[in-house]
Structure formats: C-alpha cells, structure tokens
Image 1 (spheres, rainbow, N blue to C red):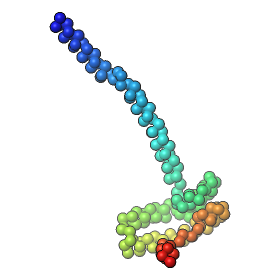
Image 2: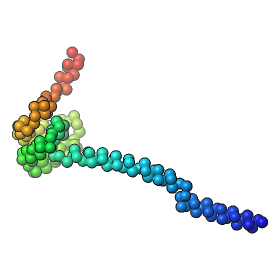
Image 3: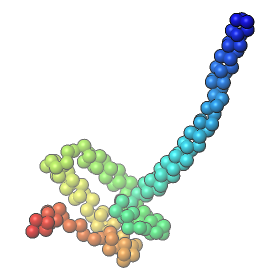
Image 4: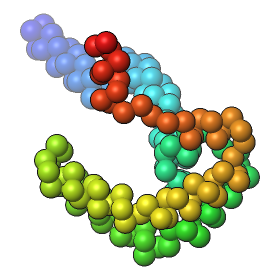
Length: 159
C-alpha cells in the first residue's frame, strides 16, 4: 500500500512538473500579454514614422511651421538647396557643433554666435526673398512676424 501511494505521488509530481514546464494553464496569460504588447508597438511605430516625416525636410523648423503645401515644400527645398550649397551646409553644421560645445551666456559664445550670423546673413536674406515669392499672405504673416526682444518684454511688464 505504501509503495503504491509513493508511485502515485511520484506520478502526480511528474505530471505537475510537465504541465508547469509546458506552460499549460499559463498559455492564456502569455497570449493576453502578447496581445497587449502588439498594439503598443504599433502606436510607437506610427509615432516614430510621424517624427521621421518632420525630419525628412532640410528646411528650418520655422519654415515648416507655417503649414506648407506639398508644392510649396518642394519649391522651398529647391530654393534652399540653390542658395545653401552642400559645402555651405556642411560649414553650417560644423559651426553649430562648435557653438554647442561653448557655454551659453559667456562672451566667447556670444562672439561666435555673432560670427555665425554674419557669415550666413547674405544667404539668409536671399532665402527670405525667395520665400516671399513662394508663401501665401497668411504664411508670410506667420513667418515674418517680428519677435519682441526680451528686454522690451520685461520693461513692459514692470511699467
């Protein structure tokens, strides 16, 4: 009798281990979690694709924010590539990389930023002239609106 109980007990333990190893009973849980993970990945992928669409253009963010049509986007990119040659674009990238290494608010930072502005001023003026011919009135108003300097804003608040 004792030996038959031991045999049955061993068989029950072996069957229990087999079911645990195979995941019987927990298969539904893994199916649920797999179902939950899939939609999250889809949402993330579409979010990444949306970001990638914004990054695809070579135009400055400020130009893209005015709401260009597809035709305008192509025309603006062509004008940008015409004015800013690849060498000039590479120089711009190098200069801004160096600017990022400098500490904001220092005299060296301000001087280098002024140097960058002076270097690209003629190209910026030419690009703005092209933009005036490509944008609608509403887009021009949005792009060319003048930003108030910080000093004037603080003076107006204290007065």
